[in-house]
Length: 624
Image (cartoon, rainbow, N blue to C red; front, side, top):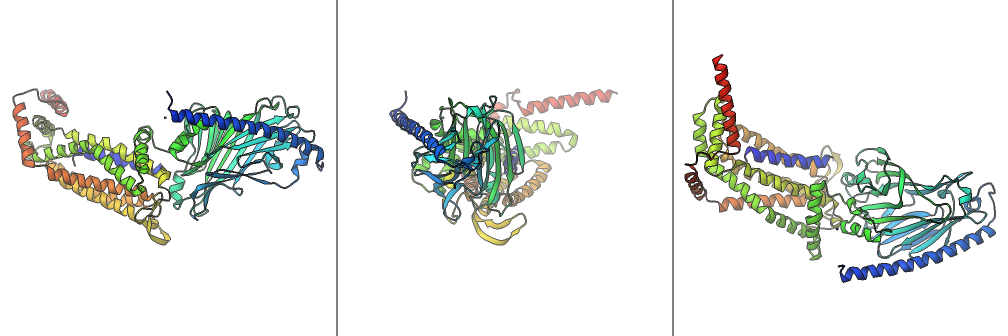
């Protein structure tokens, strides 16, 4: 491995280690739109009917209810036991509690937790949502009152909070068909006379302690974060590793309480303002990951002429599914919710979004298991980068066969002060033989983004969750083939076999690379560099073991077969390369260029200029 290759490899490793620490319409579309329009008309009719019935129910309740607390406007609604209302489709089961009038739990039917039960995204024990209205005489907190339900079905419900004079606050909930999306509309009827004229907003206080859904606490916590989108389209998040409070100056479109594979997202269509966010990690072993808290305000019309509209997404972080949420948005805006799937920095996100995801989904649709999908994806990537890999190998092979000539040049310049002359002649020799040492470095820099892109893609691919392959029961978390009863420093309570294989393939690839490059390095400096390389290549797999032992089996499996593929490719290129024929080709290049005195360029030219400058300085000082 030449010096430039080492630099490229170290850059790649440094970036990876830095990451560890820190879309004429078609007939189908027209049909889909018509279906959505039909659904929307039906839902509008349901909401209109529900509104009328809710108002009638509110009036009847106001006239019939006793008045145990006559000092408050909604005193009668503080009595009574909360009722559980269930909205569900084939994907999700959402429950609402009439005491508070809000969603209290969300159960995802297609996903299992560690106990093989349906994933609970929200829970009555950990989730609190409170809407606040600033009244003239008191602040109204919906969490303190019991709403009256009406027009209850599997997909809709209206909840009314009615005052003693018949004024009311009504929540309309609609669970969209075949979706994880819930629509919420908040309306006022006659409350304007009780609210200060300057008050045009309703406050929202949302708290949740999200539970640990996966086996590996550290790995899941690393990808769990309170995320939000501002109206400029930027996606940001609070710290994943430490407690953080933040007051947001911009207006927001949505706020997401996200863990690794699932999210609860509150979307506001009158924007969220005066937002205060906080995120606090929970201790390992508590069964919880993070405590999230969001306080905000959104527009509210006390006169009832304009309802406050919101949506809540309660589902998986699946890239293409989240993209489809744009079609369900109330004003068809680009929600950019697919950004909840962290695909990395812009360059790596581009590779994953426009290549990896499409190839991954195509291979999945062919019916292959996830382990085979990752294998085929790795082979495809190796085929795509093979030309650059071959170029890198041939560059090293050319330098190897020219080594005897370079050794002769070194013998001509035994003194250190002649090092520039020696380097100039070496670079000129490379030029005359048609060899570019830098060509061995560039391919590595080209391949590095693919490695890093996969580092971001695999841990965020929910398709790997719960998928078995070989000895791993779940490719989305570590494969603890060996498990300890206690934690061992720097290792944890297990050893991942895929991680061990990854580190072993890393060692094999490094050994082959050093063996190939050993004879291409010139002089005594080469010997010292080789010793440094040997130590680096031996220690790197050990260092990787301590980092990747807690990472997902899918990621370690990918790196294992990727490095194994690189080692096989290197062996194949060495087997196919005839050093005698390669040297003969280089000699032909030399004969073509030997009569060309201008055949000095690139680094050789710069070294020549540096040498002349040095000679001029020596002459200048020599005169004095």
